[in-house]
Image (cartoon, rainbow, N blue to C red; front, side, top):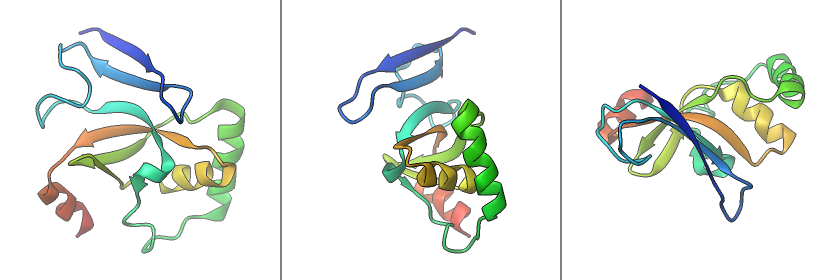
Length: 123
């Protein structure tokens, strides 16, 4: 199966990269069980429901900031899309490093989910 990269201009970003399989469906559509899509999302669009209960290691955040400055983000964070609202459940250190660097976006591996899936993650 072939993959493609699509660059889309946006008003508040230089571009958005969309990575998806060539199954014929446009990004953001398709079945619930379709594979994840990788997108560059604005940080302010990602809700971090677990940030209040987990503390980040400041040394790890600093290491990531240094790495991101030099070579960019190597591994996207995992995000759950529930009815068009994005919830981040992994990648807390990478997310905080982006915040501290003042970067407007972060690369995310997005999976679609239901409200029940979200409740399961919040337990």
